[in-house]
Amino acid sequence: MEKKTQLLLGLSTDNVDALFESISASELNMDDILLDRETTFRKKYNINETTDIIPLLEDNQFIKIEKTPEYVLAGYNSQKDYDSDEYARLRKVEYDLLNQDEMRFDDMENGTNTWGAAINAIKDKYPKPEEK
Picture 1 (tube, one colour):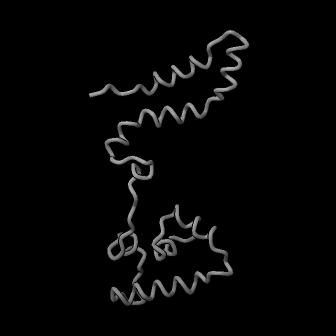
Picture 2 (picture 1 turned 90 degrees about the vertical axis):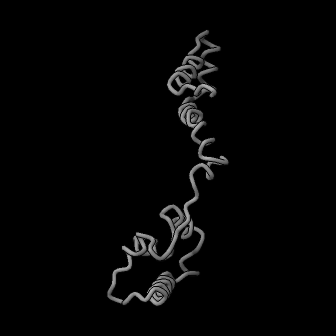
Picture 3 (picture 1 turned 180 degrees about the vertical axis):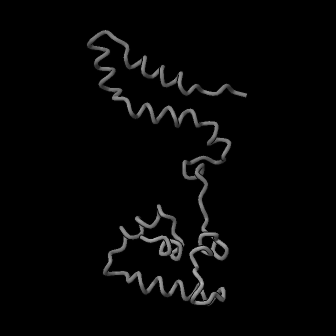
């Protein structure tokens, strides 16, 4: 979808795909909706037909698109709490890359400790911060 369309609809890039997945083309005439939104926008803010409205929309001079803070999306109550758990989020990314069940099984069969060594390497790479 072109940038002008996204801006006129007031949608972030992330939300556009979800919108169009939920609405079939037969239910929606995007050209009519966009023309109506643009016409309304131009009338409301007294912007003539020859003015390019994309810079106005990009600068959010007339519309405000609320962005939910990342810490809220992640389920935290504050930015401080979110920041203090960064090590845990970084560890989890690497833990998820390991095939831990197979590593533990192989360790049991072979008498090795590759799983423990891999977990400790990740913990060493992303140490838990000291309590203040």
